[in-house]
Length: 276
Image (cartoon, rainbow, N blue to C red; front, side, top):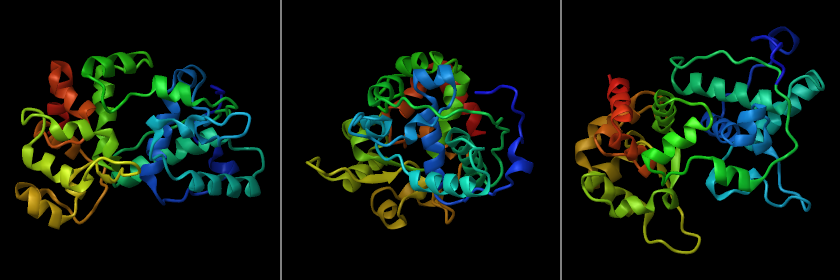
């Protein structure tokens, strides 16, 4: 990355408004691109966008841990529009960062805003093994999470903050199926039953998705399996707010890695603070 390139560098030279479709996909793509050891050392390099080729059939896109990454076509459309307007000026890496920045603002109704400098260079190396090794897994314990984030120079506080992104989006049942037999101390039984009903039996090719946030569930499904949470449902879906922390402290989250935050005092205190 060119550290001399200032924030707002492209405002006058490009001035293109990024499309607002599918912001959840942009946000997750950026995190999964930024969180490999290679990109942490070299900066966001858009390596997650590279397609498999005969010479490299296993790029980051193909890594099992990147299941469900989406919105690649939107990034492609943005890149094509920018190349037509100002050829060779804006990298895919910068586009991905700006898309994630704008997605955070869109999903939070403007509450989450941050500046992002320009000047990133696109990478040419993309390995599924890097993503599989370096990205935090949904089955991680809190010790594994803290260790994983610290390798990338994130603090425990930042781990808790970034986990709040699970207030939006969806998760594949394969990412939390072990939670479907977890004890009540880890997950509210009624919510566990709701997830079990939606996921169904495990089998070849059977990997449905469910909302990360019970707030975004189908009201009929919640009424049947989890009536106490009917009051938490909202007409506005996929709102990036602090509901993740409310849900986690109430033991109604999908991923084991989310619940694990409650097993370590600093992480639990962070969730309690963010809930207010």
